[in-house]
Amino acid sequence: MHEKNTAEVQKKIEQFVNEALAFNKKHNIFVRESIKEVYEKDVDDCLPVLQKINDSDKILDLGSGGGFPGIIIAITKPLCEIYLLEKSKKKCYFLNKTIDLLGLKNAKVLNTVISKNNNLGSYTLITARAFSSTTNILELTQKNLDDGGKYVLLKGKKEKITEELATIDTNKYKYEIIKLENKKYERHLLEIRKNE
Image 1: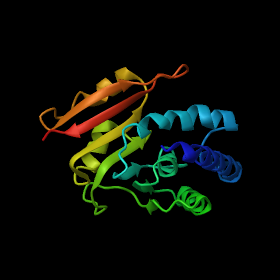
Image 2: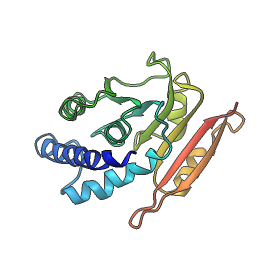
Image 3: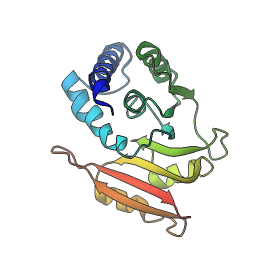
């Protein structure tokens, strides 16, 4: 991130958080009470994903919900293309409204449910947070990851991740579980690549 943009990025994230809370009061899109809580549980939780993103990435965010990490990525990585997949019309309305408000030219909402035989195209990076199990994500998106692409999934407890990875085909995929610095919650980043 270029220094001069940092203040602008912070301002947009702030606007996004305020929008989310205001919308939430009427439409209940996520369980959060205060700005502080959204920063702690949502914004900070999404930031580690940013270190895994290249400017040229075309990204699919599965089950974007209230826009974490999709909108955060769109704000902080303006050169990426990001597609926010969400089945709830209400949440898609909020995401589109936020994209317009913040002038995010690099983000597009896909109001759909993902299935194995989807025609959503291919992506260099697929991300998800609290969307589904790892094996299910791999199965649903097997046609959607570019060669040389990767999954970067935001996950919780390590034992749960290990459990989910027990059935993964290690001939086909290699993975790394990265422990995140989080004082309050056990959080990990799971990075998965296809074996070349």
